[in-house]
Figure (tube, rainbow, N blue to C red):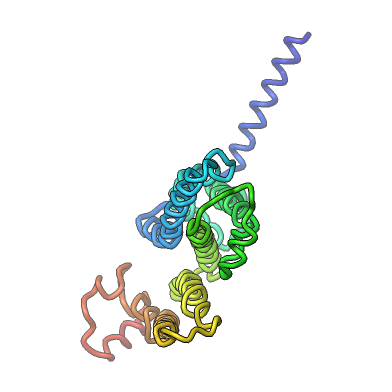
Length: 290
């Protein structure tokens, strides 16, 4: 009787696994264009991961100097230096399915029955959660205040200066990369089939990284009312704001990058490179009307 029950239970389990497999769509919807776009979307996160790796090396070096290298936080950061890049690479292959279901077809129900989409969510949320558990520690979360970073740093994690600030800043850079990739994908999803506005998603990492650098660098320096070298910070701040503003205009204005990749004006998937230079405005108008 027990054998019969066990056999029927195993058969039932296999039936459920097969049913779930039939319910989930495993297609990656991977094309050359989507693959290159997924790499571009992941580039800001790879920059953050590179900085995080440097911060983890500094943190481990500081722990070794204080004979504190067996602390769990040290082990977690060392694990994340390998785990986060692996998840980022996997998301490059899973992102096209996310865009295919949610952006191109606006089919959110099918998206949550797609195995690559679910895997993309898992590969983003798990490393993000593990990283933010470190960032929410006292001292680590006070990125814009070196005083709070030093005074509120946990006594159980002994470090010499300047490893506190180096670790905190570079961990926050990795967190910024996570947000940049997430928001850029959300931009693509909610812009749907509008290819021109999808390109405007370049704005997301552009604003996040430049705002962080300007706020943590020259703006943080000027808030302290320094008496020397103010002109350096002011020049950096003004130049950065003008440069970012100009790039935003080129991203979103009708005469900027959007017009360059407009498929109604430039025939072919490569825009103007596919058909050669346009000699006059009349030619562009003729192509648009046709």
